[in-house]
Image (cartoon, rainbow, N blue to C red):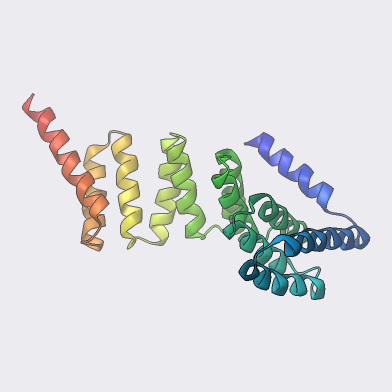
Length: 217
């Protein structure tokens, strides 16, 4: 993770330059869009034209770069999306929407360590960002770092204890840690908060069945 931080800082240093350099960045971004405008279908082109004009008028607006990146990503242009999120972060390295979108890109491309790095940056900037906390828990769980997963899930739960899905996620973590009583407690909380939470209902039944089998042996 430290190496990722160094890489990110190097990247930001390379991207933090004079106004002249920033003007070059916006010009290059416009060229990318111009090329896509020439090759795209009508529906895609219409929206891209609007974004293109916005960028021409506001070449230093981080929100415009982020919106263009979001548009590219939703239309399957992952490389272009990543570039525009980077450009938004060049203007403001603490711009949370671009950091979050970049984490989505990294997740999509299977770079989970980079996903986690972006989310941890968001957590440092906005400690109360429940979305970042929940996703950090999810990705640490995916990497089998259960203690970290529990740490972030607990932080999220403390800020939003009425979230049924969050209770379910904590139950899954406790079950993976073999803390079965706590797992059962959180599955039950999840169902109490949302009677239609089928995942929690199924997990609770399976856990009870597992414990019953152990007790009969």
